[in-house]
Structure formats: C-alpha cells, structure tokens
Length: 266
Image 1: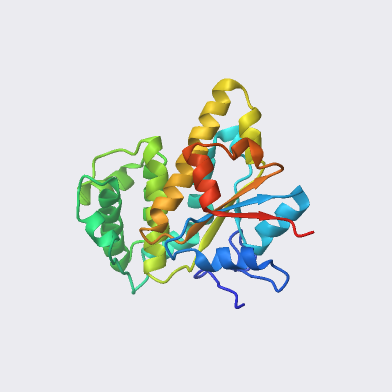
Image 2: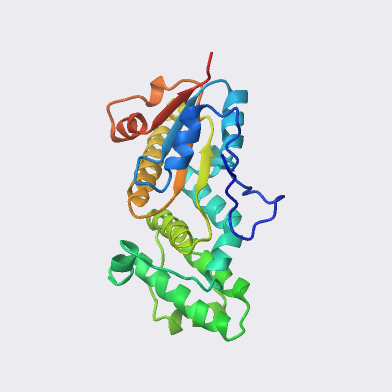
C-alpha cells in the first residue's frame, strides 16, 4: 500500500509518513485505512512489548510515553500540540482552507468552544496573510488551549477575534481533535495515530490514581470515537500485556470491544 505523508513534515520529525508495510497483518492495515471513515478508531494490541512497538511503527504513531507521570489527558494534549505543530501551523497559511459539514454547523454555534477557536484561527489567518509570522499565532493558540499565560500581543489576537473564554482541562481534547479534523478537511493530513503503551497498568494503580486513569482513558476513547464521526482521522492505539483488566462491562470496555483487537500472529 502507498505511504501517506503528512503535509510539510520532514522525514526525521516525530510524525513520519504512514507506511503500511507488506508484513503488516491485514487487521492492522484495515484499521489504518478505516480511519476517518466513521468507524470506531480504537486499536488494542495485546502482545509482548516488542511486537507492540512494531505495530506502533507500522502505524507511525505518536508515542504518548509519560502518561503515568503526567496523566493521560494532559500527555495526549501536549503530545498532539507539540508534534502536530507543523500541521497546525499550515492551517494558518494553506490556501485551500475548507470547513465542511458537520464542522461548519458547529463553528457557527457560539456556545461551542471550538467556535471560539475557529474565530481565532480566522483572525490569525487574516494577519498572516498581511505578513505576520504564523508561529506567533500558533504559539498563542497552543498556550490558550493549555490555559497558559498569554503575552500582551497574544492577548490582542483573542481580543480582535472577540474571544474571552478560557479553556478548562476537560475541554482540551475536543479542541485538539477539532484541529485534526480541520487539518484533514483542508487536505493537510490523511490520518494520525496515537499510541499509549502499558494501559493495562492503569488498573493496578492505587485507588485514586486508578479511578483517574480509567476516567481519562474512557474520555480519550469516547472523544476519539465521537470526533471520528465528525471527520477526525485520528486513531488511538492501546498497548497491553493482558486485555482482561480492561475488558469489563463499562463504557470503556465496550468501546474497546467495538474497535479492533489485535494479537501477535502465532
């Protein structure tokens, strides 16, 4: 199968071209090609770690490595914003900037926070077209999503876009998935994948940490599935030594079973 290269990324960058190698099992290849088609975008790999790493390589996945240290949601958001920077920067410059349904209806409704983000992007695109550096505005957008302090010049961007709301941690995933969906509609990417390894360890953490991890895993799986139906071609890979701890009659367990489960061929 042909490789799919994200727009304007160099080969040595962390998000590399997606290569479905000849040795990739059909199930993995099918899962990759299904991203963005409205199916459940979850792939759970139950296998020894070396084989799991091979699968992540087949999928050119963004490796979310420090989720046990920083939290699942926080690490996914920061990884997407950092490694997706070249793609999201192109959103401020690309000529074929498209917003089709269902995103068009969503950005027109101001009670959605993504409507605020879209207005900021439009304002940034206008100023970039006038000669301003896109990196300045992308940094402002990133800081806003992460709820970090903005510079006075960055605050001006939001004032001119008439955006005053601040982002809550529970809203960050939606904003990142919106950026991915918008990038796909504008032809900047075909698909992206995230890999979280050892997620079965979430069930063996202390009671408080376990509850937090499982809630954030559930939020990530649900958000990815919801945004898949809204045009986001972002897939999530869960790597586990054993699936049993996550294969429970919960919303997360049902989503995992609704997605693709892959085990190392014998």
